[in-house]
Image (cartoon, rainbow, N blue to C red; front, side, top):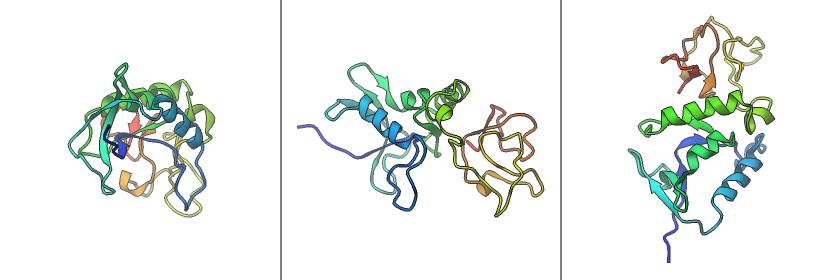
Length: 178
């Protein structure tokens, strides 16, 4: 009999379906269904671990590969637009690949990128922040002042176009707060 382990797919984040404090997020039902399509009950998988093996909820933190064809499930979710790249250091083994796949999915308007008005929850500096800087088309972030850091906004892995007045895109790859 195979071992059964609860796994948190590292490097990605999908819209939320199970948070009792919030409504189901845009494209959450589709993302859950797509994962079930990729990994029907009983599918044999190989887990690849990064630096940390467990999260705070005692779930295994892993990259998942379907053994029948070696499909990298985490990457496929991002490539097809059912998940966003979401890397939490020190588990960063596939960050470059996942961010590149997210950029392609966003540009092609695949999955959540073409179906949701704001696939990444909007980040606002405070109540009534109505003006959004055009440098951040995926999130509503006001222009400076004040100068904001990634810790000041809730959004992660959002697009940066143009001047990046808050300097969220430290490595210049067009993705902020990685």
